[in-house]
Amino acid sequence: MTTLCSILQAVVDDYEGIADVMFEAVRHGRSAYTEEQRLAWVPRRRTGSDWIERLNSQTIFAAEVAGKIDGFMSLAENGYIDFAYIRPSAQGTGMFRRLYQAIENLAMQTGEPRLWVHASLTAQPAFTAIGFLLTRKETVEIDGHLLQRFEMEKQLEHARIGTCSK
Figure (cartoon, rainbow, N blue to C red):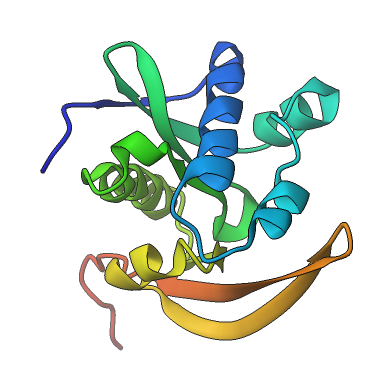
């Protein structure tokens, strides 16, 4: 099933909606994490100057359906995908792939050789499905709770325009 959505570059006015998506995805979506782990990961909706500063340092694409943000993905420095969240009601609609395509297109335009991510247990299958490979399994501690995640990467193939030889 495909959802009719618009993929737009997010602006500051979208940050509240982005925070809602992240909160709903972590706290109310399908998850391999316990309730305690989810609460430690995202205890409340993100707000404040640190949140705004972190988002401002990245390029964020938001998926909008009927005027509401239902998903977002961000590209930080060095090809790092910092955020990738889909509202539970929009999961399984192709939104993740559409957001990822916007990220990959931007990375290709800027000459990034690879994209990489710290994928949650929940996000790992989606990243695998679009060609990411597992580079390392990690355990991180958040507020006294241990959470597993995966460092993953995808090498980008840039088109070559001819070759030079002597």
